[in-house]
Image 1 (cartoon, helix red, strand yellow):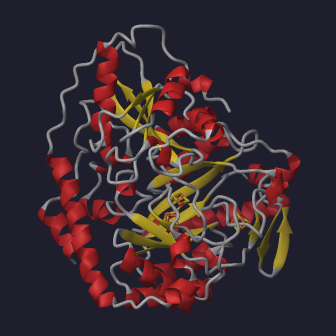
Image 2 (cartoon, helix red, strand yellow):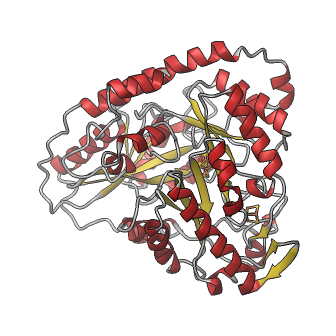
Image 3 (spheres, helix red, strand yellow):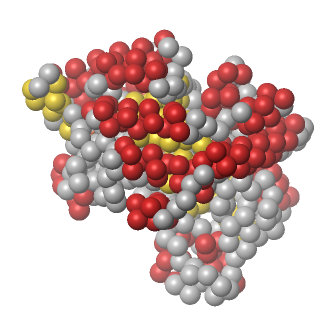
Length: 496
Ligand code: CLF
Ligand code: SF4
């Protein structure tokens, strides 16, 4: 395969270029310490590598309607909250329809490297539909990585089948390792044809999850653990979860915020269980980071999402549209290989760049900056076109990725940036705690309002690599004396 040839000729990036002497803090820095065969598994998986998510896309097919447990944060009418934000799946697909859709997307979005099955129920509670889809894709689209996300209840009995289909990325949602905590999250499980309630059900689920995790890691499958952070229920406990799953060989831990709204009709939503704020999420991710690699770029995507993380191009690939598409997959694979090779070359070039020397005195405080990007690892988006911003922390230790902030799109195009004041205010609220926003362009009106809110707009670094630009702006702030005053309390200030 061309992409592997390129990677083998020029080993996968060992360190992201442009970062200062300190750690980038992203999992790409951690990736540099991985064995070559693992790096090759993750370098083009947008969820398993923070760097990859700037370049490579994933898609989900919604072939798995049933579930074998009940989570208090889930309503069956909505996508599985393991891997999605609430929102109904537009189209439930048969395996044949799903395969057709995957091939259509792969032909039209060549940077799509991963097909995941993540709902809307539990993929392994629908084994025939799930494995029929995987079996067909292994034959018809061998250049696509296969990925699955499960609650873990049926995992041990499915491990052989997963390995048989070369599925080497599995996500297990593990919210607890203590049945008393579990009883507050799972009202029941369906096990051996019976509904088992409370602590007893939670204990069986935990045992199955842990057993499945051990079996997969023993077979060399990369396992990511997702955990839903539920304040007052499992927040403190997740540190223990992180330790336990790391000890059992999990590759990555993704702590996601609970989404609980009364209108979703979930138990937590109706009961008024609150979601964590940004500061609580970041604090817990930082606390767990000592134990293992943390994922911070998850978008809690839909069970039928298509595109780069953070974008959804599903509406371009509805069943009626796919019916009209003529797909020559052999031809598409050639084009895909060329695109993948170009991205690999770009990543290798980045890795080959010498690290910048960082001579910033250690007493300067860290600063959060927001970045508008549409992918490619560079600053390339107009402020008014951004539906989300990536947030980076710059400090004397270097630049590290912190997370993303969703915002309402307020610019309908053209040069009339800033017409919709309310939406602009929403964007500004989303950027709370950030001291600068870097974008390719910005209109006069939002510029003034951002400045008034204490966020310095910056359009000087268009098309530059994100981390280089963030470090350059940090140095400019130091040179301008802006960091000589007392530290900005961005952590506390982020409380929603
Ligand atoms: Fe899908 Fe999940 Fe595979 Fe990724 S998503 S099955 S591992 S291909 Fe990714 Fe989406 Fe977060 Fe999931 S951003 S919700 S972690
Ligand atoms: Fe819902 Fe997923 Fe939990 Fe099943 S595992 S109840 S589909 S969130």
